[in-house]
Length: 442
Ligand code: SAH
Ligand code: SF4
Ligand code: F3S
Image 1 (cartoon, rainbow, N blue to C red):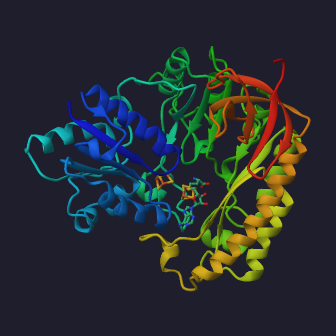
Image 2 (image 1 turned 120 degrees about the vertical axis):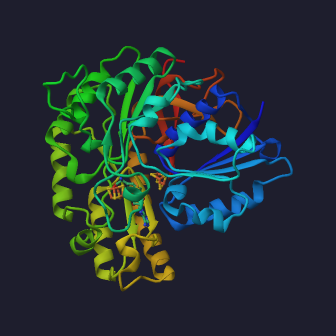
Image 3 (image 1 turned 180 degrees about the vertical axis):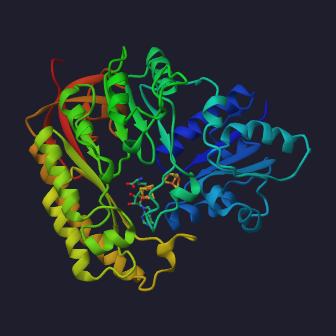
């Protein structure tokens, strides 16, 4: 049996892809090892969203290659963006494969091992084929991702995703429902529906016939169907675009107990001029109005967001608008980044690039505000009881860490193994990134 070692970077889309890729390799007779020096095949499944992510790839190839290595494969978004340049940067790479063709990797590896060829590159962007070709999963976890949508048509001027993942494609509802049913039957309790832009989902209704229009199911309809499946305890979705949040989707949140009352709605900036040159398709006020409407419809909803600081030409005053917006919303969780110029995106060639030093100063200022809000929110949970799904052991003996509906980490002590179990937890103390509590009824 040929052994493989896989390194995975990137977002939830890559987590899903690489799980399916690992299953394809196992079904094709390869054996997974967890130490790179034991592997004949090294696979890097990569992310290209910011410069740091892609730089990491090339340093890792050099570090992990060993005497045993026979084949090196680079897949995912860097592969899609850089294509044959990767062969030039790293002479040792044999296979370059994009995110839409990972189901073909077992065959490509066999060709290299059989000496049929030394180098293969496949970066085609046909989105339907891979889902049809993937085998059933080998290992099912209590919490699973299901891809419902891929690609993006929004073309934000800083972002590589429309180029690395291609145009928007929604999987037919029947395929998603069947995959979810199978996961639930095999032990999954929590499902996260994933995509680059899940709230623009337009999938075919199940049992479509030739006279029915295509793509009529929206995210809210899919959520209703999935949340009624046997065995499902919690449903999430990510990530969404502010402009695609409909009233119907907000209403599903208020009427559906399985769906977590939590929405990741990235704003990126609080300034209208910056939002316009980012091509985000909304103003700061429109965004705030949507959040307000959402709270009116579903009072228990909480929000998280992504931010980019130091976008080309952003002035200090414009950056302050972002601080003001963050202060106003009081997000429970946030992810903030320094703007990173990506090749072939319009923003990378804009005049008025901001220095790394200035971006660093703005990032620190924003993170101070975001952390303050997070601490404030975590403190407000003290004394409340929350349903927690436990995911892993903590650093201390008998310590377990899980997630509440708002994706916050909750730490408890227990003599029983809690991994994969839902428990009601009373929150007793709060810190920056987590809260601690006691299990109720033990
Ligand atoms: N589709 C999602 C986000 C996908 S990328 C959305 O539109 O909301 C995840 C996050 O990475 C983005 O929300 C953005 O904050 C960040 N990001 C994307 N490109 C970036 C770049 N060039 N520099 C810095 N951050 C970037
Ligand atoms: Fe990138 Fe914008 Fe699409 Fe999100 S919506 S994936 S940031 S282009
Ligand atoms: Fe990265 Fe590709 Fe996801 S660029 S963020 S792995 S879609």
